[in-house]
Length: 281
Image 1 (cartoon, rainbow, N blue to C red):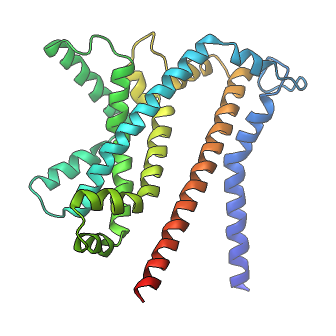
Image 2 (spheres, rainbow, N blue to C red):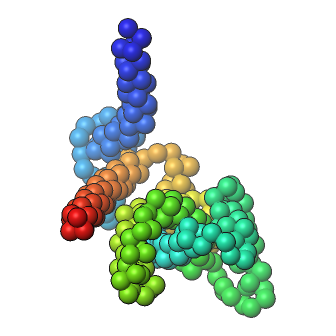
Image 3 (cartoon, helix red, strand yellow):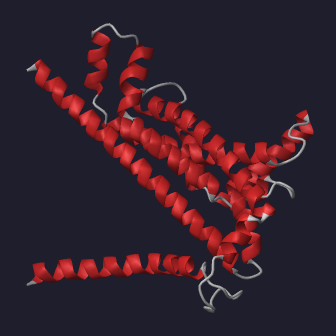
């Protein structure tokens, strides 16, 4: 009897948890088609807020700036995080490892406010000493996002490298492959799902960041999260619901596509491994 009760209790808690998170999102999506100007009062079905959103130049400029920052920062953070994760996973002992590991993981445990203030002070001191940056905007926000999101990529890559079979790399080197060939032909394809996961996580962190961005930008370089935050202060309006609905749909599609690609890559890797083992037998 106790064994039958536990799954029911756990399933009930799981359903309440999903309902707590997803019912507000579904409500927001429904009210984005509200004809009334009041976000919480239903006035009939209408798509006028989506038309208004697409014709809003301010939102378009903020979205384009956020996408450019997120794409560049995620790509750079993935490259740097992959190198750092491989170094920490493969080179167990090297001079300065403790300091390097601490510097890499420090932003992960520090509050974002501290990271934002530190970035702001760093850019101000650099402007005083070397005259750069002349203004805070695209470049400063991108650098701050790279510094912050690189930590998450490093953690993912390091964990994946710890699970990878080193025998495959050693076999490739025994067959005459050079270290850089092993890296590009064996190691990177094996950890590609982790690299893709790290890129998506870095892209998401950069795209919806508010705290660090608010410290490293100036008026005239407003990202989409900052624009939404400034509008929400005056009250949630249906156009914000429409913008959030489009964001949820686009992110959901991207996650589904990434999941399909990662699943297909993992199955292909498992198939290649089984074929290799059969060939050796």
